[in-house]
Length: 126
Image (spheres, helix red, strand yellow):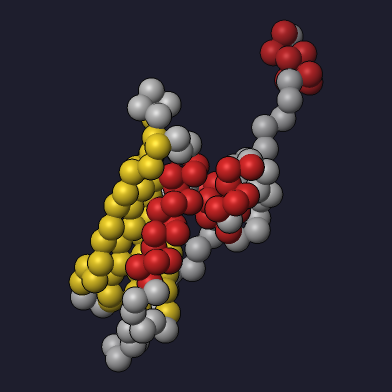
């Protein structure tokens, strides 16, 4: 009886939205690049590290990789810096198709205009 009463007043959870990303197909004679970005930060250390890697498919050859550390970054700002680092790496190659990979749901969804970018530190990076 108590369980039924709680079910009626408890908030209903909405299922988490999954990002559906199509798997890219590549032709045998086609050049495809993949960039991967990441960022991390710790409040105690007062800064964040971020990185970017540029691969060429189908061989998965690492073309370039860079990382950096900046004082005063949040984890989300570090993720954006990683994405910007990838864009910098891409500026040096003749590319036709690029796949972006990152584990920051916030950065990816904001770049795709799926969610608003409200934090002042992130608005400038976007």
